[in-house]
Every structure is written in structure tokens, then in C-alpha cells.
Amino acid sequence: MSFVRFVKLRCLAGNARPGPALGQALGPLGINMAEFCKQFNERTESVYEKDILLSIRLSAMSDRSFTFDVRSPPTSYLIKRVVGLEKGPAQPNPDAPVAYITPEAVYEIAKIKQQDEMRWHLPLEGIARSVVGTCGTMGVAVREANDA
Image (tube, rainbow, N blue to C red; front, side, top):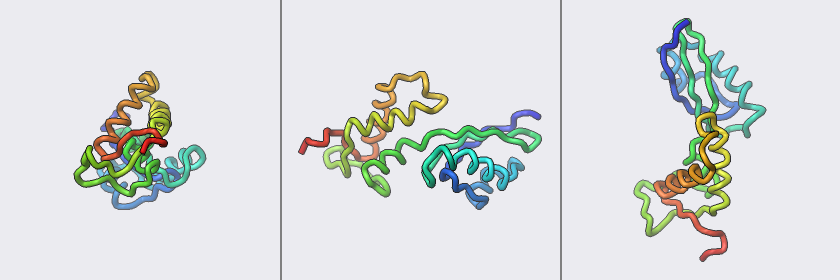
């Protein structure tokens, strides 16, 4: 059993189903999609709110076995949920933001992101700055709730 490669996926918590999206990623590696979906749904349905988009890093082995790590939702997904956007603007304009987010919400998102295996050692402030940067690229401005 030797390592073949990593695959990055995104699936809804507790709601992974065999289909074209998973088939294109897992099929060439010979991984049983139904088995992956079963394991993923079992692992995520009790831990995460249903239908939250999660990032997955799957390690494929030569004997068609696999392991996977479930990571927190993408930062842009969390920002869109907080501010109520369905999608960001095609051309974000810093002079005319499409939505606003509070610093408290930025830190809540940073706390969620800090739980990831690869970010546990990073300071919360640094992760929050990264979230603010993502907000900027999405056309979302950070300001206090009572600011006009």
C-alpha cells in the first residue's frame, strides 16, 4: 500500500452522494464512491450543521484504500453566510462595498478557521487578518455595527 496522491474536494456536511462531481475526482483513483460517501456522512452528520460546505483532503493509496481529513468551510463561504450574500460581485469595488461585516463576526470566523489541523498554531489575530483580506476581495467591508 503506497501513497498515490492527494485530492481536494468540497462536500456538504452529512449530504455527500455518489455523482458526477465525486466521480470525476475519485473514479480515476479507483476509490469506491459509495464507501467514501458513507464514511464522510457518518463523520460529519453529528459534528457539523447539515448542508454546510466542507473542505476535504483525501489521500488515495495504491490498493484503492483512502483516508481523508475534514476541514472547516472555506472562508468565503462563511463570510457569505454571515452577511447574507448568495455570491460575491464580479468586480469588487472598495469604494462601494456590497455588504458589511463586524469585527466580532470576523473573529468568530477566525476561531472556526483556527480549529483546522494546519492552523492550530497560528495566532487568532493573524487568521482574522486573513479573513479581513478575503472580505476585501469579496467586496465586503469591515465596520462596527453602529457605524453609519
